[in-house]
Image (cartoon, rainbow, N blue to C red):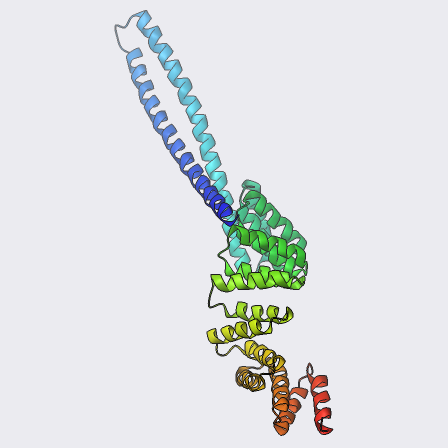
Length: 344
């Protein structure tokens, strides 16, 4: 399936390229024919003006003249049509480029207008629909953005970037089932874009399809072996699926890629606590505390849990007290402190 889509993608690109080449060659050929016939017409005109020609000779030359003149007029019409088409396509490209510039400048309403102008001239431009969709998504007009992306993939069914952008619009709009469908299309067309694979896995995760989430997080790490974020998310998915040993391996891979990856340290600590590896859990939690701001509460709680299990109660108390300063962890930490105060 993936090979067939990739082949189709390359064929479409080749066809588009050849169409441009053929049009250019056709126009050049017509210009050459036009010039040749104009020269021939001049020669016939000179012969018609020559002295001493007979009436029959003159009439034959006149027929040639009229035939050449008709052919010249036809070629002129065709060349004018080619030039008009070329101008139209150039104007469409200018409007498209203007839309891109306005998008980068944050002038989103103006960018949409420029993309619409381009599409009015060239409704087959998949990239212009995609640019319009990206702009509408920036304005959080997700339904309109999706409609534009659908036009983009209708114009070019191999435009995996438009499918991915459609997936993101659905994801940001919390429409995770449709996000899965769009990202799946993007990945089927181009299975080498790790960010699209990762987002497909996240989308599966959001609809609680853990098996497919694991499948595509794994695929993302295969495409990009140093993708630490994918390893961390893979570990989370394994934890959800009850595969704690695989989760630990994934978290350790994330940390081996980025030794300051605070979230991976915290989740590794939690996984080790779950398997009774309390010293490893304490080490991971302490490493997290060295580098984190965001996960201080979580890391302190996991460190307290590990220290308590190791019988280091004073140390556990210190960690739980630190965790209690984090609003998210306060209730759990205070519960553990209450147990410690009772000798439990």
